[in-house]
Length: 192
Image 1: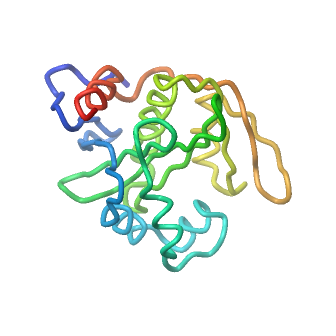
Image 2: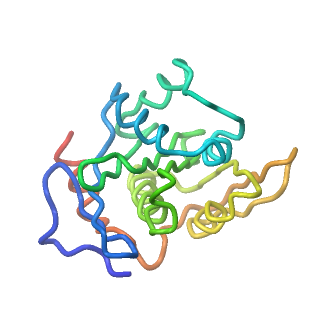
């Protein structure tokens, strides 16, 4: 899928086309911004929540919500995807150390299978690489086949440890690009 054209760039967000032609708008999640995180969580089924958080989670505890909204420009980055003004997904990375980031994706169930996860992953991988990170890590539910496929695109090699898949690898950007990477970096530069 080709990257977005420069004609679809705005100073505060980037447009990305899903597999079915729908357009998602992507922008950085702001520090302390709770509502979109709660909206995406509410749109996830119990199974999706368990696969994302590796435990049953009927609601987001305050300490988890606080951690998910403690985002910035380098060590913990999260980007929100909206469609028709509704929050539908969040892609994020958090630094393990000076070279490795842990990546995670949350997509509202209604939008599974439309390419949104790949778009979010390309976004956070682009930002991690631009911020000087060279390795990626993740912990994944073995039954989450879609996430496993996506994570392999950015360099993860996964193995079973204590009932979950864990892995690390050299960070690489997905090929072909799912987003206009220059536009994503431009939004970040504009915000700083």
